[in-house]
Image (cartoon, rainbow, N blue to C red):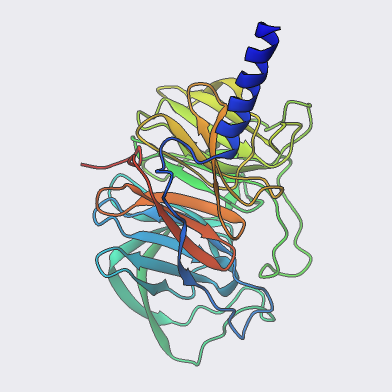
Length: 352
């Protein structure tokens, strides 16, 4: 009888730990909405904020509203939001590389861009790929951050499915996920030219693009669509998430060992949760955008792959990043909103 009682207590404690705030967040902490992104007249779609990433030099946070083709900048010192780049290649996932360059999955032409945060240039207004979609500008030139196309959107001469999320490793190589989600801003009738949706690696010198995984499957043996991606601070482990799969939390996330030459091996199912965006703290926890059945952030122990808490958010999150000068504030992009919550930890990728 006593053992049964203890088992029930343990079960209740486990449920509470999963449904309550994680130990990394103070019990009195609240999620605050910092900004609401309005819908622009040139798009029929509601805002969809994504791609949150922190500038290691300043603590400022950059994110996108993909539907309005904008990259935003949250300046920590002034607590103000500004448009950093528009148009922005319909950028999606973003990260900073070891040299402080902003790397973006420029989804309009399935490219990777390297974007300067402090150098601008005047260029003719970039016309949309699909003339029926997007802001065509008012004519003349526009001042934009200086950017370079570092991956032209093709593998073996064929168009990629659409780079979704990207991660810069310590050696400055880039890994990115390439699912295929049909976009309105693409040319009409475009089909997936690749035979698989998988993960790619761009070499540190930006000259060689390879498939890091020959294929990407979920545990039920079905072809998956990789989405969120993140590496450990030491560059030895890469985590790749998918919304599909039989995982109890909705989707699955896999871990891979990263070899000296960038090859991925020792695939293992790390967590029974999929995710759009992911970030880590310096105490061994992963923060994942929860499946659509729950509106918030699922916090998972990196050591065990088990949930240790949940942070409710008013809108469905798509991405997140630790930011601020000391990297202890968690910033969250969620549909039309940009949110934050203070934590008792710091982001794992702090650059000193």
